[in-house]
Picture 1: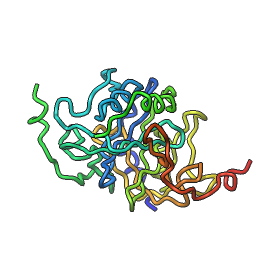
Picture 2: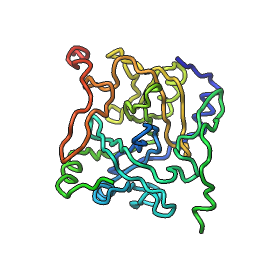
Picture 3: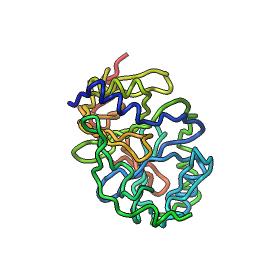
Picture 4: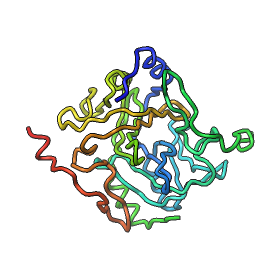
Length: 137
Length: 137
């Protein structure tokens, strides 16, 4: 069991974005089908789930832009749906996918590339691409 | 790549609970540290994250009851925190834990115990305990 100090806790709490979540959405956990690595989490509305299942590629709903988006539309880093797993309350989906390229817009295979340890965030994954090369204006 | 029919999509969409999500919360993905199986997803507010880190055991925030809860308080099925991994936007945490007993209140090791395949939900895990034996009134 791991217990954290007051200072460590403060660091983590202050780093987190507790943005207001609103709307008829469910969280989608996207997982690499082969390795079980968690790649990302994002929200989906009904339209995004429908589009994902219709096309075989993951679509999500952006709370900031208030619109559906296709993962990899700009970068080419698409997510092919391999298996759909649903939770006990039917209010979340675990999407097992084949990730083309990398899931994270910052250039890492998974968005979860930092551990929180000894009050610091430590990168545990290599960067696969430079975002500047992918997301040109 | 997996593409679903209109009927299949309707089955899934109709099964999902798109309950309104509101408040200053972040989603927490809880993962078995050893196997990388995703056990559950739940929301946490600041107090729940603080309590988790202070005690070493997972606490979440219940949107329906509007209060913090300790995982396993009734069942004894506690989650010991082993590693904290944070995502690129700092708005979600992947908690790697040692799960005592089972994560799902329905008696399965993981809440994600059903796949959606050919328009049907299929159980892919054995039931470990009978909820009636654990959650007595």
